[in-house]
Length: 257
Length: 288
Image (cartoon, rainbow over all chains, first blue to last red; front, side, top):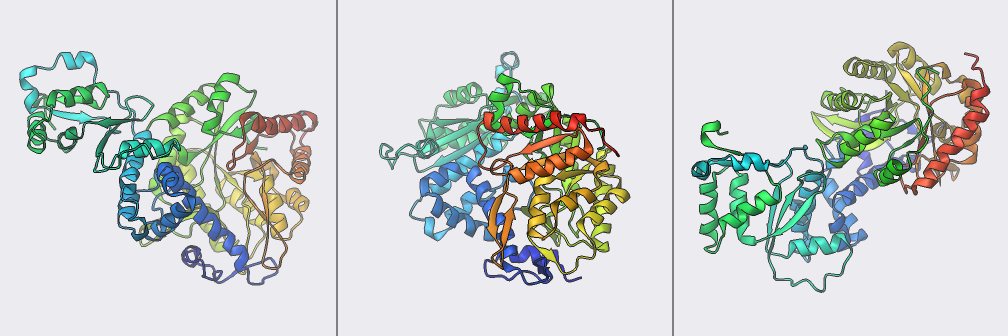
């Protein structure tokens, strides 16, 4: 048999590659133009999936440049899963290392927000901790407790005004009013159906990350205060509770994980 | 046809959700692409559950790659099983095509429905894959005739013979995509009516209708592209009439996946199919 799916698949990614052996028109003649319909379909479908995953990034750089980044990204990371709804893993890191995108230093952080948003959108439906359960927790044991977060929760800390940039880009608003030097941190939570993107006090970032990494509340408080002496632990905890980020609080004697 | 008659349905698009729940359109079912509901939770599942409460579903896979010459991806097959178990759709279907390539256990997903040559070897392979799928899902699936842009010098049998053998050996049902027939007939220089007359319509569980685009091939001849981005062409409606004159009432899906129109425009396409069915299909006592 002349037909090889390996050759057919490989040649799809090379704009100059000929039609694979045995690929012909109905009269048996070579058919590179017909084969190139598949090349085009595959690349266009990938770029559309990438644009659906990173709409703010696309709006920030324009379609042409976005597709140029996309083509370079696809050469490195073609989809390795049938789940195109989750396509775009590692795009932020790729953009951070992509030469032509260096002029837009905040682009990778906007991409991080969009990736976290996408994962949150499709994450498992877990309810935030109930008021009842919160009220019954023994306060004296909270210091050694660990938090179980909703699977949607993510934090993005950035030296750029990443929340303002993301919000402007997603709604096609001008960036003029955004102070370029203002560092922003973002907390992403999907407590019910809507994905919420909170612009949070930047001093909360390290402490929330410590909790996400499985540290106790005491340890996270220490991390927060070490990084910033004005860090307000109670305010951070209140934010996590109010945003619905916490699924449960594991007290030591309840079998800490 | 095989199975129950589920009327006329349309491909579900999230942007139509509000229109659908508010107007509760007179449709037999909604079709969804299985892969869009393989996430863990959130809005997609909420919408699909709401639809399922009121309508039958047709779960149409686009990623299983029945035509792969490698192994069927068991992980993906089990994802499909999860969707099917959860939503209990009236119909489950996939394509006579391949869409992923597994090179040394590194899956490359090509996100397109790619053609295969029709040989004994590819037939054996597809029969085995359909068999595995039906065994895992615990039910019959429908396999759709492809739209193709190229031919293969390896091909040993006609598409009809391939599909008929596949149906007989695996016990699967079939989707007859009339737009694909129109496209392939043009692109492969066949006669669409002859193709339809030879098709094993007694095994068809669902008809598909969609719009297509036009391009040119290497010789400057017209090449049709399966774009699903516009209204169904008049010629395709003619082929549909021809089919339902033969089959009688048969479950029919309108697909419109790109440049998705507003809800009334899509619903009108379905209403047109319903009218034809009432006019022709309902009066035909299928001679099968």
